Image (tube, rainbow, N blue to C red; front, side, top):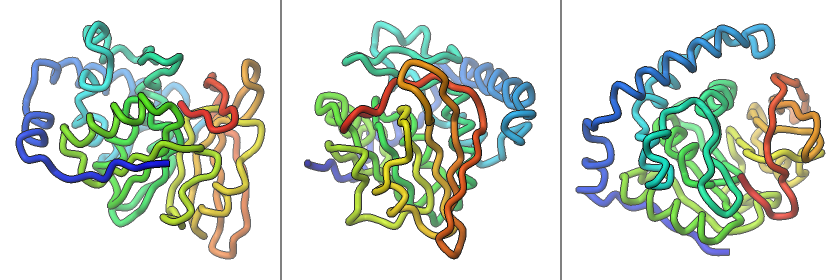
Amino acid sequence: MFSFGRSRSGDGASSGRAKDDFAAARERLLTEIEYEMRETVGYTGRGHLSDRVHRAMGEVPRHEFVPEEDVQNAYVNRARGIGYGQTISQPYIVALMTELLDLEPSDRVLEIGTGCGYQAAVLSGLVAEVYSIEFVPELGTEAGERLRRLGYDNVEVRIGDGRLGWPEKAPFDGIIVTAVAEDVPQPLLDQLANGGRMMIPLGASYGAQDLVLVTKDENGEVSHKAVLPVAFVPLVKGASE
């Protein structure tokens, strides 16, 4: 395992966050996400995004996280391929999973499946620290460099087996898993803080799946709640997004 520490790179942060030609596209995407939130409120219990999550989704330049040849589709509300058989998740799902974590500015979050770094970038604007694990070395390396260039200086990326978590950085107030597992990996449960929340898809690798909210109360008691039918690639041993 190895890590990419975050250090703000000055020009990269300003250029990555600067006004760009995709502002209108991001606004249209946010409108679509809010529509889907209303349409799925019967499943999720959330009819709209909080102001903080709405703002975070609107600030991340998704076109920086897709392959250059797919930039024209960056703000389509669908998952897109990013190479190595992996995807950048559908923006609505990114927003919903983030929303249901109920994050606070002082929180520390673990992400399993860095992919291209898009979800980590969204989390970066909401919490104090983000730790993200990617199993595919090429993706993890590229994501770490991309996040650094864009100025997400509170995100640290590690190449490794996401099922094992990041014990030396635990406990985490929130954990987000971007691939489906049959059961919640025990190391992730162990690393979830009392009072913490985890979002994870559970079910068959290529069959019925549910996005599940896992909560651990202040006494360490764990509960599960199915939120929404979803379709994710499998979290095989060590695999990620």
